[in-house]
Length: 329
Image (cartoon, rainbow, N blue to C red; front, side):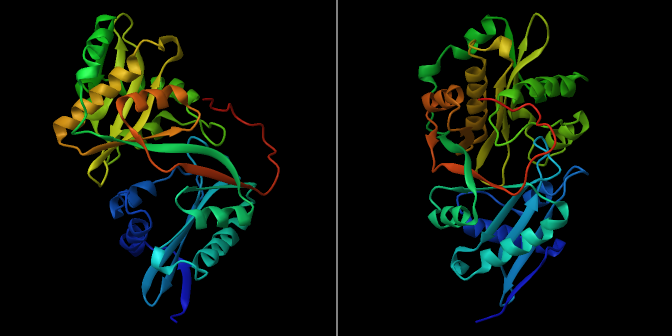
């Protein structure tokens, strides 16, 4: 058997890493381009990656990182991925040990990881290591080309008649304040997004980099509802390009004072209209398992739930700093 070699990540590894992820998750789009973009972190984020090689082939990847928007200096995410053909050989264990050794100088107090319910070996492995279930969420998928708008006739028009404009960011680019208005809306909407840990501040400049400098930003697919009286952005629903034949939903949310007016539904319908026009096969979205408000909308629209994902956390120490405001369902 060829000797296993665990070494630090090098830039030349991006194509091989994409191959590992495609082999492990064939129903998801992964590419060198998306990996490179994902690696553009804020300066405070500590991260590292290791490669497992056998017989000259990259067969596994292990990495640690921190979360912008959920940042804590001693909290990390860790993921280990091994090509299916090379599993049950100790490769994942070796990568995990290397990653945890690299984390020691940072004095971690908790580690977050995740996997899907159709990966029983991964679940058993995480539980054996002492990880405890934290949060569950579904990915759901919509067949765009067979979507029937007839049951939803008049929904968009009713919202517009009630005093709201529904616009894409592409249509709003002429407004020099459109980025600031979107950021202000996002700051409020994110408060109600379930997460496995506490919120942290996201600077306007960093938010703009995430959104407007992303290779996957789709201005035609970022929709907002605008109060005609005040000009305020009050709801949003965003679609992102991927390297596959589907669009990925980002955040859908509404300011608390504007809920139960049909805004989120109308914006999602606008997104489906766009996807049909673009010839897109599928829209995908993710929802925390207890987030009934968004789940109900997606279920009614015909989104089909996929195997559930679970976040797991390994506690390593006590938190000394006071927690930030928790996001609520």
